[in-house]
Length: 621
Image (cartoon, rainbow, N blue to C red):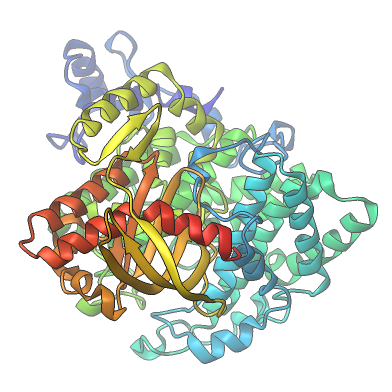
């Protein structure tokens, strides 16, 4: 039976439930609980408590549910590999809009930089316990995955071929094989050795190399059908030697504390099982991981280690939950049944996440008796928000536990950067592109909600007009006129995959008549097919009117279109929230009582299409 059927009672109760029950029912007998559940059906707390105890209440009589869902009961015959890890077929997905593709030179350059990369030397020079610097391996693999998914989902044969060639190049170069392996890392000091947050963390070197390899395996699964016999042999040999060094020693090994990326390696083992078509390994891994999750997730929904990391407790709790929900989703998709007790803990852990968002003091009042060597107390290192790497946590919570994620404004803002890459690196896929997510997005109810929301939002947007699903800027246009040739920005250190046509342009903008303003600065086009967005650097002397308003502008409108010295201008979008943010910028400058800044803003916004046209015509991607 599909595990969602087993939690139907939880789903019903969750519709009205909050973080905690209105009263403590733990001391009540099963019989009394079921009697109240039957007689007071308008109060969901009794039914919810019965579900969490694993009992059914037919006619007010308490009965223990079947033991079929106990941990350690997955059989090899239950497993059906979907072929593409998180789905049977990779489809075009709107949630990937704006993510990298191989049509863009920066994306290709970024992935090529990973081939044979010396991660050990990078880690040694730049990483400490509190701040691992992983962007030179974690970002390229995400670009590789996103661009590959986009190529397959959009049936772009040229880009599929590019992805396949990169897959083979990475294998031939033994990429990351010289990183520290599992056996050797166990001999090294722990992270935060002697309480020093700046001490080396050897586990980071191992774990991030291991995770990047797992992401490589996922991409290999996606491309498996594209490989000929010799190409398959190259990739397969690389994967076997990497698995032997990084993952095989972890098979069925208990972690001392916490639940972290790729389900403490469990998802990685499942991926390898799928690649090798080893159903026995997949079943054994699931049985082991279910028991581990049951051990590490407490009865009240808190997570061993994760939930008790001081000022980063919510950040790490939500990471652990995100990974656990992903594992449950994959297990169900592959034909396994998630144990009822564990399912209940996942529901409670989801509610604990909401508790942390809405009532930090109550969340952190829960005592922890274990050793916590990685607890963060410094306010300078605080992350009092949901983990922004887990950009689709709300989606997974809704799918797996039917709990709605509470509003976390900081998280919603910070996750936007991670969404640009299209892949959640903690789990290796985008939950918004799963079959269940795509089906929910296209349901009549969801489409009706979106339409109503769009109508309400567009009524407040004076600078846009709506055409179908697209919002187009409805202001006077300005023309960009080149004065001197552009200068390309191609420094790998600063060039990101989402920055297209990046260059310093030098010219002027003309808005009606003969009035012109000087416009010379570093600019780029934001990648994506769903939006026309120009991003400019405001450090130029001619743009000082923008820079002097940066703090107050962000205070009013947030950081969505202005951050780190970059200011965005949108002329076309399918994203209502981005359109509302652009409207906020417009209203801000209109009311700012600063004529030079107001005139400059109108001119640059009006000239957005002209500048983008200039970049696309003259500057290579």
